[in-house]
Length: 93
Image: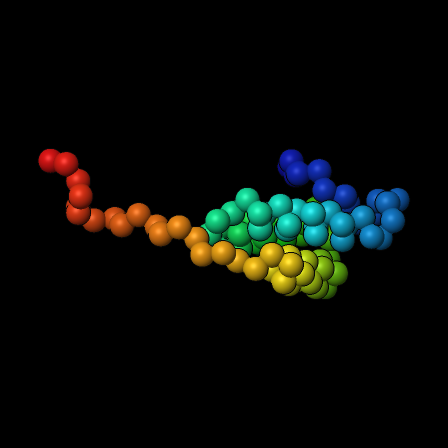
C-alpha cells in the first residue's frame, strides 16, 4: 500500500506540478538536515516513493538532480557541528 499521496503520473495536474513538488521537498530536506548524509537519505527515499507511485525513472531522476543542484547553489553548506565521539573518553564511572 502506498501511504504517500504524491501526484500520480496519470493525474490531470499540469506537468509542472511534479517538478514543483520535487523542488519544494528537496529544498525542505536540505534546510532541515544538518548532515549531508541525512539529506541524501531523504532524497533517495523521495525517489523510491515516486517510483512506487508510478513515475518513470527517466523523468524523475533529472528533476531530482536539477533540484539538488539548484538548492546547493542557492544555499551553500555551512560547517556542521562536530559529531560526538563514540569512545569512553569523558564518561563518568
